Length: 129
Picture 1 (cartoon, rainbow, N blue to C red):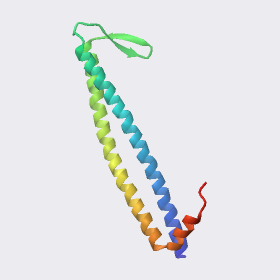
Picture 2 (cartoon, one colour):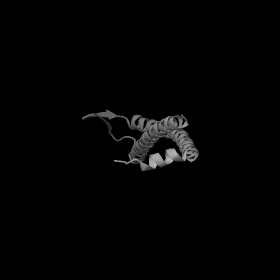
Picture 3 (cartoon, one colour):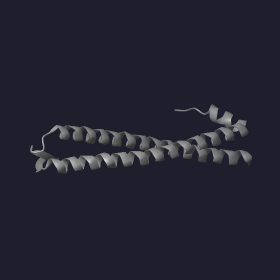
Picture 4 (cartoon, rainbow, N blue to C red):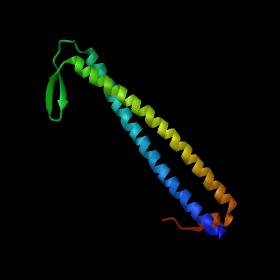
């Protein structure tokens, strides 16, 4: 009976570990994407600052280019930069939370396997394909 309870607890912890790891990877990917957006906005902003104020500037909308004042383009890039920074900080918080959850699940798994050596031997004897 205790073996069955330990087995179900192990399966539950294993599921939580898989789920947490998956979410963690998604958050890391989102952070990478937002950092790319932030860098692109920063570089575009730097290039716009070098352009004289009276120069015609164009905004890309799909396959079309629309004439826009430099100030509008700069404010859009500044907003993109701020939005990216906000998103990155939020995602970093989520990443830290998921790291804590992952470490807690790892600790719980270790404790479970130390309490039940038979379960640990059974898991180690399984073939992984």
